[in-house]
Amino acid sequence: MRVLTIAGVALIAASLVTPTTQANEQLFISVCSYVKANDKSRLRKKLKEGRLTLRNIYTDLKCNGDNLLQTAYKAGANETGEYIVKRVSKKALAQSNVWDWANANGHAASPISTVLKGKLGI
Image (cartoon, rainbow, N blue to C red; front, side, top):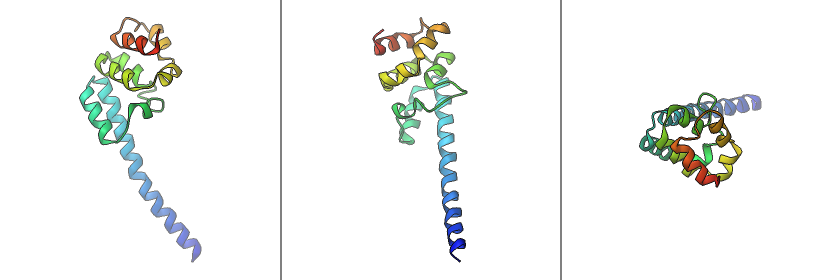
């Protein structure tokens, strides 16, 4: 009887976790697509709906293997990229080596790089 109760509780707990995981996955997909589309207002709205901050998700969220700022650079999403730089901590930006990546990939003259250089003090 006790084993049956524990199994039932585990089954209920597993069913509660799955929708949240799917909702977070959809939220992150939306964030990536708004960055690529250079849609700053929708990005801000989606983050607010999900009760997220760029500061908290920047290091962990990857869009096709790239971080959010690399995604903005590749898409030419200057407005959104500048917004990301302004909202993410200097430490997180430095740790991600995004400045070195931008230089190596020909994005040194981008408006995003101008804001990034100012934030990093380069």
